[in-house]
Image (cartoon, rainbow, N blue to C red; front, side, top):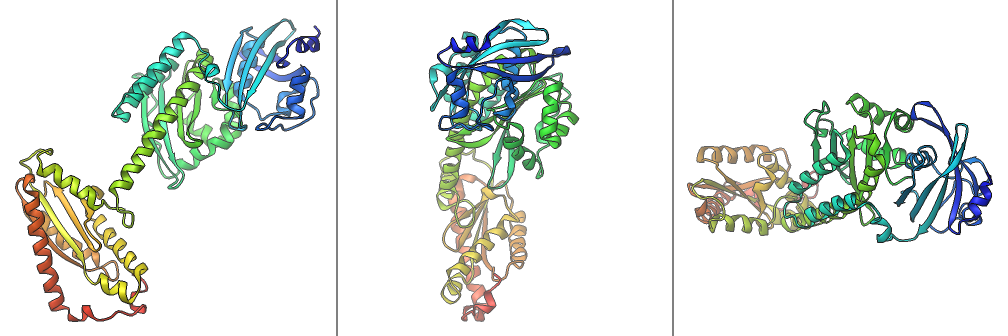
Length: 479
């Protein structure tokens, strides 16, 4: 067969690929047998956004002489050359800043255990939505349903649970999971997951600890390697995972995983996390890949928007110096009780905690020391109360509002504040509290707690006249 003539018959970048067929559905070497001028030029003079390991095209070389080993490329070559399938894929490899529009066509006859296909590609600098949507009507319908569910949702976590269950069914998998990663805190969070009823796999929540981030962080470089995803469908593919990332391989197999699909979730170029399925139907690999390529594009956009809105909500509700809730959030909480949006009939406790001596620290030591004093005051309260209950009501004043807290418990918490504040040098509170039996009377509790706090402050300064003296920097250096 004149492979060069076949390649030259294509105007687009085209090469002939050979695949060594082995027993048991396995394959050996995959080689680039010949290429037309356009294809050879793509290797020897790569277009902007692409790079090659070797810039000299040599006929019949292994494809890994030019690009990092890619299990997805190998799977498509095998299916086309050996199984005689006509295949199409449109992908954005992580290793290159371009989109590849790829077509694989089988060739006859085989040469013993060496099978052939053509590989034709087009390189796009930007995503072509027509190519992205070039999938079967069935898959298009499922992807569209995913987009509509998420776009019309007011509760993304609840809706995402339903979407993830749909994806698990499409993949005929035992588990499907969305994992978020936070590079700043080096932490992971399971946003949503779905498990089949008969699986022996356990929730990913069982594996998420401080050490798991290091495993997840390794996926981008050592597992996905150069493709847009990882699909390890059988033992042969899993051996590649083992070679590249033995720790993660052990984690998968020890949990009962036999195969895995892993896709990164991105939003505006930022890695948000991953979606994966474990123990899926390997016969549907192509369908699964096509489905998840588009679905993750939608998921990344929706999750990214959700996280952005969540960050904005936090910025609007948190005090940036201390991390506790701000005055605006306190007003909203009080209004919700006062107007009856919250259920009435439940008691509510209010504690005002006002820092003693902040003005002196600011004036005599400096505002940096004053800010540290305020942060330590918040840290004291966070040791005792939930974050959602603590509000920075003013410069040196904090309010704690807790529904369901009785009088005796409130008094005990006030004493605990006094004891815990001794851990931090310079932290001293004037405290006042009040409990009302109906949460709708919360403003009465606020007024009475404030009055009691000011009475406590007067008693403090009456009994500590030296508290008003000037402080030296040396006395406050380790606040």
